Image (cartoon, rainbow, N blue to C red):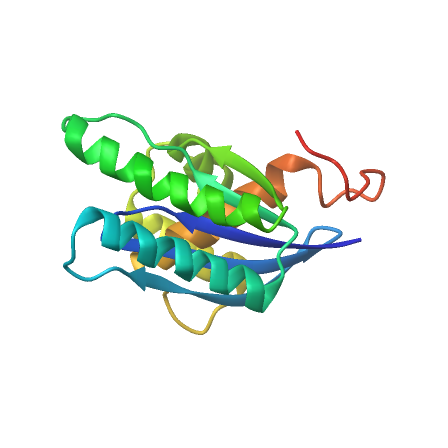
Length: 168
């Protein structure tokens, strides 16, 4: 069974995306990059994210959207903006009727690098190795690909006995 996953690393200025296909545990890279929102107002930037994710879903027809869960660190205002960026990306997935799964940053790092405290560079390196990419992806794109890899590695999609309707 083949599943197509879009990973999203939400950000109010740069939202990373990564698309891959998984077939019985074998991963195939499809696309990755960043949705750059520019310098407009927050509502304008959120619209850019929504349209960008919407277009990616239209173009690649993923089965599932995996997204990083937002955590509150030192700056609550930044966390709120990230939450809004995450919300519009989720809304784009839901508008297309695809399943949405959220993953904590620690869980993503653990699934891809083996340590919940991995650095951006370690994530970039492991994503390159796992997907056999010719070069190192940009940090936001690498994070999005890592989220997609995490979904495949932890959700059960790679096992034959799980049906396509499986939703953890």
